[in-house]
Length: 607
Image (cartoon, rainbow, N blue to C red; front, side, top):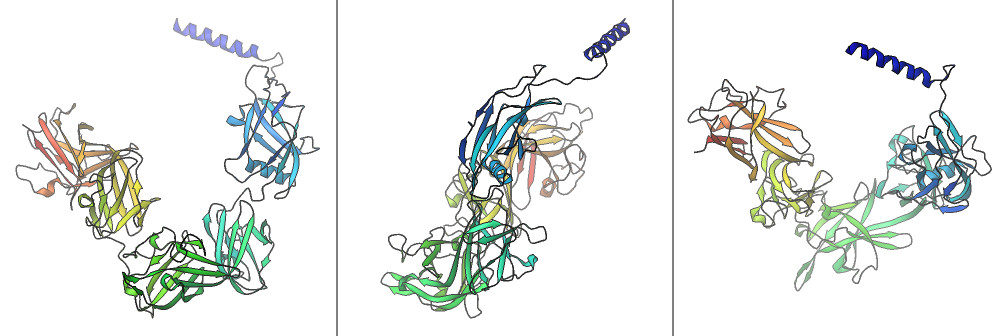
């Protein structure tokens, strides 16, 4: 009976398909009506385009109708004024992949359309737009269109991600593979301090190979194309290029010197060495005052038309205290010569005591992510490089288990030279940092963009949790992973039989009855399972690959643990321990300890 019903249903389904087609068996697509009204922007609207990632213009029109009552899709089409859209400049799907009768179009896209219409940067012109509705293979163009007047950005819609100088006038010469890189102190802005040869040409490229896009400087504007630029005379120049407004500033650097604040003058000059680096030596003698010796200094740069100070980016008011060359203590920033109420003393550093009365070398680097400088002993003698890799590491701060009292800072486990790890609780939204000791004179470190930084910066996590943090000073890397759970995993049962909550100081501990659900032969093999917040799993197994029960007086190394590459299922029987008799079915306490030279655990019955 069931077979007959199935055949009848199949027959009616076939008939329905046949009669849904036309008599000549040709498929007919669903018709769609054209859009009859355009709402926004009104015809004749004028828009000045701006270089902002969030700047946009809203377009809206009357909904079209489809013959099958379905929802049409829409495209906005643009053309030159006087065009008929037969060869449009540009097409844009409406919002929600064409499903909405409106669209939000960025100024960046409109700027491209203006360029396609023949408008130059900063030029004003008129384009027209309309809407095409479609349903299946059927399309209908609106019989109305609107005018839109736009003023193109002075800058570029597509800003290069990097920029280089090349050409006969440059330090790298005409070989593009030796092009000199620019820094990018701000978004869409590039800058370079470099030597240029007078009367010879240079240009800008975004790559150091044959696929490069070219730009050149025309007066105070950046222009795309293979033009060339010259300077009148040999010199050291600071060139600042803002692609958001296509503007350029070129300043000749006449000199850079070490400005000693107590003397209110430059005590020695720095020579340009190439690649944005200035360096020089001179004798530094601190000024004796009634309260002690004054050792404050900054830098003075003289351009062809003005002087400017370069002082501390972070407004420190101390000596370097062992800060290394890459430390943010030495980062520099430009200030006006008369800026502030006491320009002679503002934004200064302090020389370390070892430089008093000594020949001193100062190196200033105008390249890389941060402009910076460094001070060392002159006459070919350099001071001992400050220690940047601590012998020990501690966690302190409001977010940490020890709070802000550095004497209670929580110690990391040392895995190797410069490699440390900690399992700890952190409070979300509150700050922590790393310290080289639990003493008041500790050197501090913090995490920024996944890297270890030296200095008194701070770090946060988004939410409360238990975290595993591993830092490696050899490559300044940091790995932070939130731990969701820890448990005792039974090999035969293939399941966590006892949860081990975190109780503090790197210890997870739980108490309960260990009762496998499928263990008729009382199998006593087990491991430990850690689950991270992203649901990835990590098996911790025996460090010594034992295959015996621990007995009454086991060697402590029996319980040592190590992480394995096996997941819970694939490594079901590898690197396991065994329970002593009397554990299964009875109340048991399990403790996992992530501190000390060897991570370990314990398991014992509880009366």
